[in-house]
Length: 137
Picture (cartoon, rainbow, N blue to C red):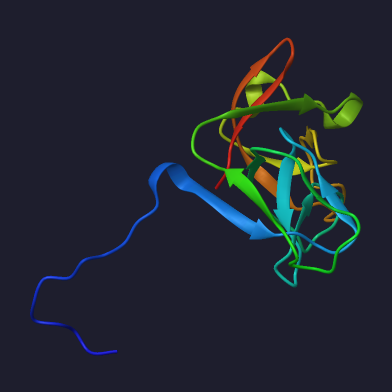
């Protein structure tokens, strides 16, 4: 593309919201961690190395009876979101603030990548008694 020499009306989206096409036979629940598969379809968080965390589902999107892309899920990614903490050797503590955390399932994040079996969820921003606050990166 060539540089322009006049003003341009650049479109933007407010609030870092997006809608992603949902994987076939999949239900994404409101409030859960949403990822994109290698093919670009949304699903709930799960253990896999090829997933990209994109945010939190703003509402439930039920594509259990549809083909990939038949519906979209609304996702929000700005701010910090509280998800469940893992346990034992995967437990995230305040010492982990600023580090990456990893997807364990659609509501849980873990300290370690499970011997390179888990995708990054985001950055740990805070830890409290009820969970881990993460920022999607």
